[in-house]
Image (cartoon, rainbow, N blue to C red; front, top):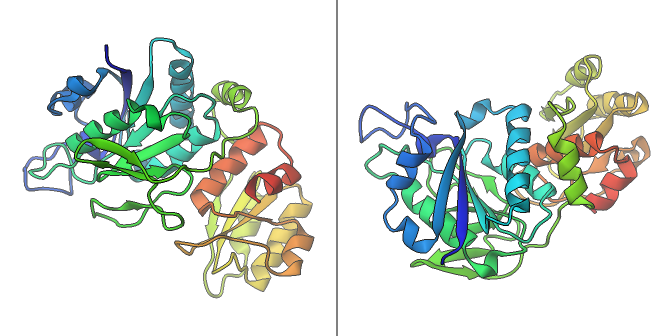
Length: 330
């Protein structure tokens, strides 16, 4: 009896269909159903007892909070089930790192949860999806993958959900972890971990996941991208239009132009939580100017802006304070 691995299919490029086998762009994402997706992977059932379920059939650029919360709910149910030993999720790559991090925040079990995708559609001559699925199932079925949080597996590499990001628009090796690197690999079918990823799920993750599953949407938290000559008018606009939090993707170490800083400080005084992140691809956002601390801005640490946004949304749902966020991100 092998491990029982359940696959949740969300659509994306990995399930994409194009009219020409040489086409790697201009395809319809999510067009291939989970049964056909799994049938295209030779030897899959030799690795584990694999079952599949179609949870969504979307291009991941169009994913909504409601869809992500549905995913959280279904993963929670499967983690609590005695009939499942591990979970694999096939997902579009545009927002894969976001869904992975959201699941990681509320991961409460030692069962592996592995997310994979593809950069080329299922109909492409050089489709990377089948091997990525096979590798993801291998990882989900590995005892060494237990108690490591949510893992992202593509291109024979294993990454932590917290640190991985999409680096290239089209390359198959697009998913990388600029800080820390891959935590493991699948070498000729053998799962190897180089080192452990530090677990960073929220305290009381089981109850937090239950709280999330009762939500129909998440609080409005926009990411604003810093640039030269930014005058802060977008900060004022979102503050006047219901933002509960703001993530500002500043320059370098989360640097903020003076005019923007003034508007963000005003937003904090209105009760809006502000996180300073960076538009740089690598590095940690730490304390910087004293005025940032005095205004109450929170440094994002190792989180990129999109992941900082999700953390802030979950924190707001759960009633976490700015002090709680500071401690978690330290």
